[in-house]
Length: 157
Image (cartoon, rainbow, N blue to C red; front, side, top):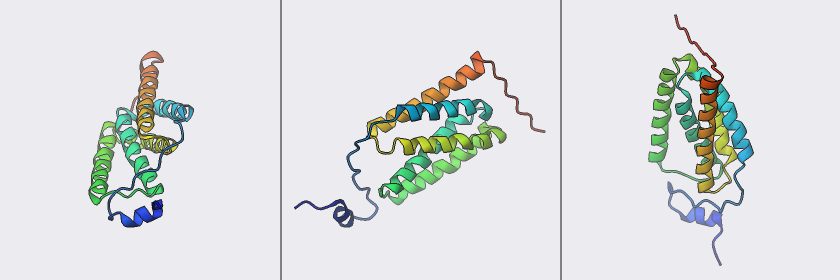
């Protein structure tokens, strides 16, 4: 008789990640496209904070997905994520000239939501979803700044 997942969780040493159950859902490209489009529409107003904001959102979203599915990480992983969030937030506010960094918090939320959208997909599909989000955001940002000639000026002082 094979042990259930609850029995396997009790038998595994604390701090080790449990094996994720087999993913059966397919990646929802429509939702990821809409999220990428929304992030791209906000990106010009963040100066250059949007790439860092996407990374911060992905870190936060992945941590939330792991917590919701019962996957436990080591303390070193938590410490590394906390360090990345602190450094990333500081960089986001610097690259966004503070005001753009505040606006980039919307992108952080959207990126975290995109992680939750692709939570039940397989690992390869999640990576494809992350790449798709970044590409769509970059293309929309490029189109808005260079093709549509959107001019965003941030004056401080």
